Image (cartoon, rainbow, N blue to C red):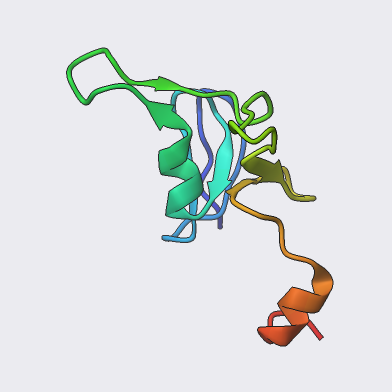
Length: 90
């Protein structure tokens, strides 16, 4: 059974591959995506969430992308050919 977040009502996969933010209620695939959406110092009440849909890198690209499940990823989106080469899909 997947965890359920009481604030937003979303369910999300548990484990170490995904992270659900208790502040903005978005689900992220991988630690890099989760950590990259949080900014500010670690002093009390100074961290905040970035909106992954609105972020644009200095070169004009979007660093976050969302998969069919609604989970946010960080970095370049892989093509099916790249996934096949890694043995992730047939």
